[in-house]
Image (cartoon, rainbow, N blue to C red; front, side, top):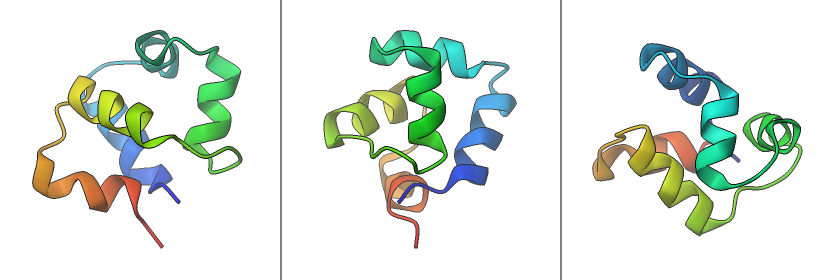
Length: 68
């Protein structure tokens, strides 16, 4: 389960949109929205691509993508 609030905050902090993130992952914006809201899961490769795009440090990866 992803940390929805933390990811949305990071996207906003970087002045990006969910559409920008969806394009990087090569998925549609509604699909990205479902993933960020824990309706659909991110694959590990998608999480890694998104983390790199959002400049999330490796040591914080788990905080964003393995939230309980």
